[in-house]
Each structure stands twice: as structure tokens, then as C-alpha cells.
View 1 (cartoon, helix red, strand yellow):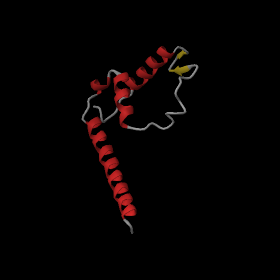
View 2 (view 1 turned 90 degrees about the horizontal axis):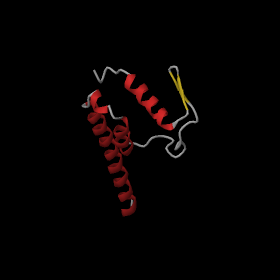
View 3 (view 1 turned 60 degrees about the horizontal axis):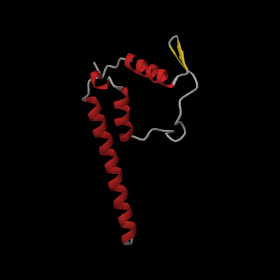
View 4 (view 1 turned 30 degrees about the horizontal axis):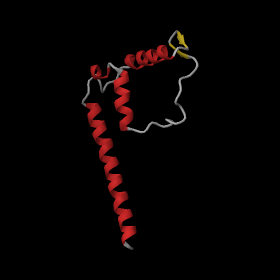
Length: 97
């Protein structure tokens, strides 16, 4: 094995280890948080999206024309964001209790 191949293997191993440790640290960070820490969903998602790659980011950069949740329907983007916030805020999790 030449030096270039050796460097490539070392790089791949280091990158794999970094990703593993990063996932573990993000998980520990969120496990230590309380539900009150996520009251502002915009701040949460702004932080969280820098930590992970969301599938379909490039595909879904716009809001749907109309969003339905519970008995409400909205086509206004701001109202849709509020609906998402209400939906996620209503979810109870044993890890947050």
C-alpha cells in the first residue's frame, strides 16, 4: 500500500470516528435538555439543522399550499409554522418527563 492509500484509509477512519462521536454528543446534548428548552421552535430548528443533515433539504425548500392539522386548515405560511409548533408542542415523550 502506498502513502496515498494509507492516508485515504486514515482519513476515512478518522471521519467515521468523528461522525460517531458527533452523533453521540448531539444525542447526549438533547437528552440533557428539558421540554421548556424547546419552547421556541425556530431557535431549536436553526440550531438542530446545523447539527444534522435533513433528508430532502434540497427538494423541500417551500411550504405546502395548504396544511391541515386537527380541525384547522391554513394556506398562510406563518399560520402553517404555528400549526407545526402546536403539533410538536402537544407531543409528550417519556424522555422529556
